[in-house]
Image (tube, rainbow, N blue to C red; front, side, top):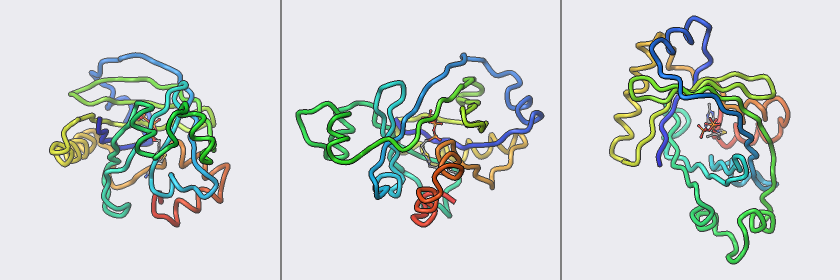
Length: 196
Ligand code: V4E
């Protein structure tokens, strides 16, 4: 699947307006552990490998350059086979073992409590991360590359119609956690123009 999403830090008033009339899909709590090697080889290429509740997932960027991007666009690989093939991991081993053998180790673990909503065809997630950071996402999922640009524009228009500023890009949970706890990794991602 391809995910097109935009992050926001909401005021109480913006949250009320955005959720007005939304269908609540539920609340869940999950743990993400992100992996990289000592040179930050994955994240410096904007590749995000994580284990969510024990299942590996890899986000692959489909974005324009950081200065041009208006939303975050990533393709998601969700099977061990796809991830092992993409990362060219040694064959014949469980992904967790193969990752360790080639030097990918955990660099951050975040527990998120997420409220999920649906409104007008969009997924709206309100996340509270365990290190004290709240962030909202408006998200559109597609499996058609041809509908990415349309989704991009629709999210921007939708956000603007709800009084949300679209010319700021708040840091995601991982970026903010690195800023607070791992300045060297954070700076490497800024230098690589992966985050601002
Ligand atoms: C893509 C990315 C990271 C991986 C985590 O992505 P995120 O969407 O924050 O996580 P989450 O929990 O909402 O995943 P979901 O449940 O939606 O699959 S960490 C950093 N990035 C890139 C990134 C970026 N380039 N710019 C900004 C402002 N934030 C994050």
